Image 1 (cartoon, rainbow, N blue to C red):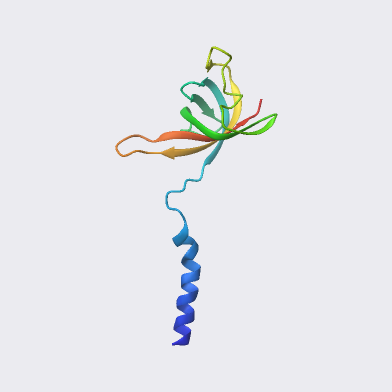
Image 2: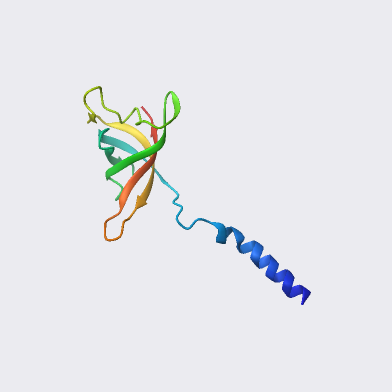
Length: 121
């Protein structure tokens, strides 16, 4: 009887992390590539991933954090994606790293959401 209790306790402790894990948590996918278009007002970018088939296309930038040569920042819009004063659009190629999660609303296709940006240039 005592052995059964110890086994049950061991199973409960072993399964505890799995039971406490948030089933809605998303781990971002890290990609490197080139942004060829960005719009600061709509927060959309066109991204071409390095050697990652199927990862090219439009992404929505919700990045709460981003990093550039000056360091890490919270909020605002990443400096390497931001337009000039009076023009929110940029069409030059910029090398970046992005952290991406995918969200799918019922009946809709998946949306790629950038949650982190690393400006390489």
